Length: 394
Image 1: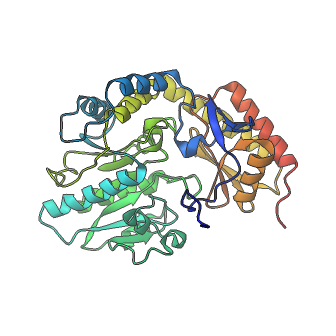
Image 2 (image 1 turned 90 degrees about the vertical axis):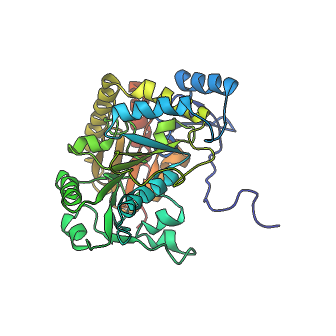
C-alpha cells in the first residue's frame, strides 16, 4: 500500500508539534518554535490559556454533546452574547469556517427565495478570495488551483475584481442576490479593502435589496483590534461568517445575520449534528471572556501598530527582499519582492519562526493576540537573523 494513513492532501512539513506553551510550539524532538502563525489565526489566546483550558475541562466533565434535537442553554447564552456585541439578531453555530460560509450563502439565497424571488440566487464574489474547501465555497472563488479535479463547479457565482466597486457593479443583474467579500483578504495576501469599496457595496446592497455577506473567518474575533473587522468601515453587513479564533483552537464557527436577512431560515432549512455542542459553546464563551472588552482590543491595536512600525523600519535595510507592510491589528502582511513561500520555509526550518505564506508574494504574520514584549522582540530577532542569511532565488 503506497497511500499514507492520513489522506495526502497536505504537503506536511517536518515540524511535528506535540506541546504548546503560550506563544511557542514544541516539536516531538524538543525543538521550540516561536508561533506567529497561530494555527492560521486560530490560537488567538496562545497554546496554554488557563481560562480556555479550564472552561473546556469543566464542560467536558459535565456534558459534551446532545444534538440539536433539544434545547441549548449553552448555545443560547453564546448566541445572545454575539447578538449583544455585533450587528446581528440571530446566530447559527457551525464547526468550521467553510460551514459558516455555506450557511451564509444559503441565508443570502433564502432571503430572496422566501420572498418569492426564485431567480435571485447569484452572489458576486471577488478575485483572490478564499472562502473554504466545500463545493460551494470553492465555486465562490476564482482560483483555478482549488477547482482542478472538482469540476463542474456549482452555479451561482460571478467574480469581480477585489477592491474595485465599478467591477462589482458591472456584474449586477436581475438574478443577483448579493455580494460575498472578505473585508480583509487573508489567503489573498492580507489585503484590506478600501473604505470606498466597502461603503459602496453597502450602498449598492441597500439600493437594490441585496445581501452584503462578509467572510470574517480569518479577520474576525479581535484579530484586527476590533471584535469584527466590519467595525473599521463604519457599516454593518447583513450576514457574517466567523470561525477560526472564535473557538481559540476548538472547532467552532458561526453564521451571524440580521432578522431581515434570516427571514428564509426557518424550521428545517438548515442543520448540523455537532454545531453548537456544549463543549464548543464553552470554548466560545471563554474566548469572548478574554477578548470582548475595550482594553484587550486596544492592546491588540497597539501591538499591531508597534510591530508594523518596526517592520517598516526593518524592511528599509533589505530593499531587494521586501516590498511593503500592510494589515490591521495583529493581522499583518509582509510583502516580498519574490515568491514568499521559500522565505517562509527558511524562517521555519532554519530559524524556528512560524509564519504563513499567502498570495501576492506575502508572508502572513498572525501572532497570538496575547503575545507580549518578549515574544515580539524574539520575533524580530529571528526575522532579522533569517533575513540576513536568506538567499532569494535568482
